[in-house]
Amino acid sequence: MNDQVQTLERQSPFGAALSQTERNKVLRNTYWLLALSLLPTVIGAWIGVATGITQSLNGILGLVVFLGGAFGFIYAIEKTKNSAAGVPVLLGFTFFMGLMLSRLIAMVLGFSNGASLVMTAFGGTAGVFFVMASLASVIKRDLSGMGKWLFVGAIVLLVGSVVNVFVGSSAGMMAISVLAIAIFSAYMLYDLKQIIDGGETNYISATLALYLDIFNVFQSLLALLGIFGGERD
Image (cartoon, rainbow, N blue to C red):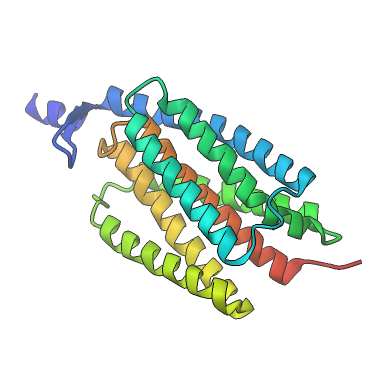
């Protein structure tokens, strides 16, 4: 009997015991909100491409606007995640991220095969998510120790990205994109495993983490496809 209880109810790293039913509920709500969050992203990207509103945001100005807006929204999401305002703030963030992504999308759409490249990046990102979700559901090992290493990797990636804004190296951009795909694919596995194991109990925070993973994988994959696969008329 004790073994059965321990199987159904494990202690999370934060000290809150979640039953299997509760963990499944967090995962289900996260998936629904994640799917919903993609809609404002698409709308934001479409508006950005159609109006060209983000075309002037290049170099240091683009970096300041992106980092300031992103970190501001993330702070607001964490402050409102336990209230009714949490979901609207999250959706506002995903709209902002869509706007920020529109500059890259517009550049890729400038190629004769641009639409194909965007769809390939979308399909590749979906494939990565499917693989990581499948792995997270079958791996029994505790992956919480990955968190600190992935965080260090993300910081290194951020610093490298800032440096490359000033350097403007194509080789640097390629290296950063490859590293980002690797780091955020691993983060995807880590975040999904945290939800499945009960380490993340708030579905808004869980959605935010997975959204950032997906966004970074898609953006980096699209950048690589644009560099290597873009065709001019």
